[in-house]
Length: 135
Image 1: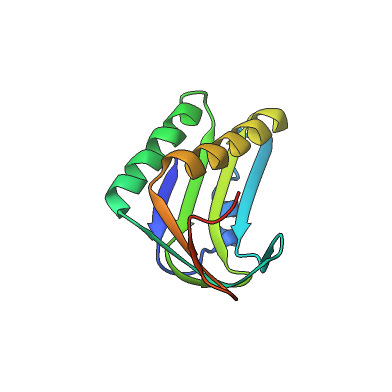
Image 2: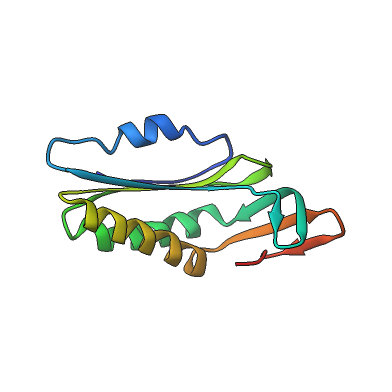
């Protein structure tokens, strides 16, 4: 059972993590992406995420389907709207029979999400506004 969502409220990390616990899985890996203050020398004050929700969730589901087809469970939740420093922007979790599969697929999901899912980031930095951010 997967859970794929775009939300405009704070992400409930505890309940999402607990949703991945099942008797058939021995490894659970989670990734939290948070709003950081510094990217190199650039100081961020806040970030605003926007998306076309239906398209973004469809693309996220495509990513999850490749992991689900291997017999694992996936949770992918991305927050949109205005986020402050320290806020959780994205939660990705993979439950697998073994830890190596969980680690590998969790990393693959966040890497591909950043490249393929239409979610736009507007960074409000101390000196100016930037679109897209820095990797």
